[in-house]
Length: 352
Picture 1 (cartoon, rainbow, N blue to C red):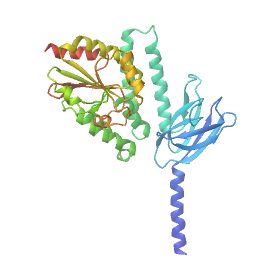
Picture 2: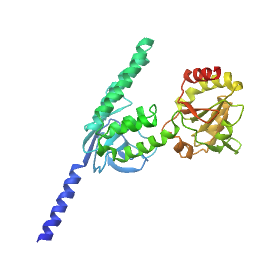
Picture 3: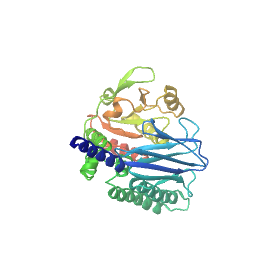
Picture 4: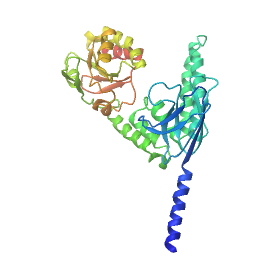
């Protein structure tokens, strides 16, 4: 009898844990296909549900909060896609009356915070893009957007959305140490989640590529298949400064930087400025085609494996474009120089 009671108690504990972590997704999306699928971040199918008159429902248990993608097709042909955070509670997915290209995801703390941030941010973005908005107001909007991000981050350090905000919005600009300082502000329990553990590992690696640190060598094939090392370019007596530039042909912001790179390279190459481009393309034709079509006449290498290469890990690359300016001594002297900032920095350094 005693053994039966112990087993019953254990079963009750397991049941209560499952109930505590139970989630449901209630959706109502006009024009959706007959089935909807729930994917993890690696595009693995977690679950599926039938759609009736645009409505569908998922139920499951999230042992730990995680990011998921909802769309109504396994491969091509989806009429919608929505990112959500699987966490205990009922998550609601619905059409957004203000934006037909977006779905509102609400109902639980992290998803409510994500939706509110997206709404507030979109309002600022629309005002910024308005042709009638003055340059002074645009500068103020940029500051407001940054303050919005930091305020929402501080309000959500107890959930996964706060982690996502730190990684995706602020992680690019922060140094490795600054990123570690931000991670330390999360509750101890959140710091043990897979997402923050991985972000901490990235921050610790990022510290090795902060300004003042020695560069980490890279050796990858050029267009002719010959291995070219970053070290050989940095040590070349003709080069006073080398820009290590991570990019890809499919990356819109990367291609938007090309005119600035070309201008800086054209004016300062003969004075000692070189660019060492590392492409994260996965198609050789796309990589080399972009180089030729855009007249990118500097050094280029690629393993043609996307982000799956050692250089991305060594430099803690989470997004592109990313760049690192290296002096002739092999020291990183600046990073993530975008737009006119690159030209101004090189002009300043070479004038010294």
